[in-house]
Amino acid sequence: MRHFDFRGTSIAYDEAGAGPPIVFLHNLGGNRHIWRAQFDALRSTHRVVAIDLIGYGESDAPDGGYTIENYLAMVTAFFEERDLRDVTLVGHCFGSALSLLYTQRHPDRVRALVLSSPLTPSTLRPTRTAWAARLGRRVRLDSLLAHVRVPGPLAGLIVAEQLGAEGSPHSSDIVAHLRESWTEPRRLMVTAAISREIPLLGVLDDFVPPTGFPPITTVWGSRNRVLSARAGAALNRTLTPARAIVVDGAGHLVMVEAPDHVTAAVLAATTGRVVDS
Image (cartoon, rainbow, N blue to C red; front, top):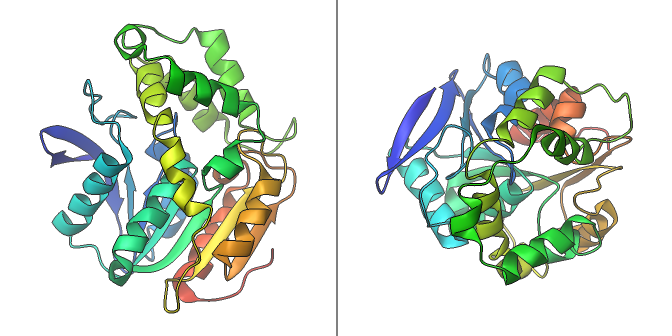
């Protein structure tokens, strides 16, 4: 693990390998370890970097700063500090939204995009997760939530909601790690604060990539209950991805449940090869 200083906030990240760079951005409630299978599989042929976003994993969780603009500024500063160019940028959920927003501003630094379950108002709206996001936007309890820990059983339910069919071949150690991470201090505060920013992601619902925009791959689990795969299919009509992959039976954590599918999609994005949907 390494650290990067962003305006006094310590950002944790892993970096390994050499070759064409791949950068991984995680979801709300997750951390860089959701990409462990892809990180380990690709480090022998690529320079791989997995970042803990502000407030998650082993990055600092300050009292404020949980805005889209601040996260984009962090990603921008990280790319510049590490001299990252011609990057395959891989995001999940909120990380996908950040990846797409960053590429809109800096298309010259991005070779290709892999967007796993991209978070937008339209992909969130049809799901049970949407009511919690609306509550987080309307009720400001940041100072209280900073001192509230999610009980272990509830953390288990939160993670279970992100998985697909019972018995799917997900990695038990990563699932256990995610359950534990949900019990960490400030986890609810950070997620509630970011939820107030979700309406600003509405710009992605109408985004049509211009000519020359880096090619996009989208990846969805067919049993995603956190975001709507059906709404994701509608989003693809405007994103016009070069590849639209649906992993049958997987849920929200498709990179954990079907690691080989996602690794193959990322590798194909770096080379331009076609993979099966």
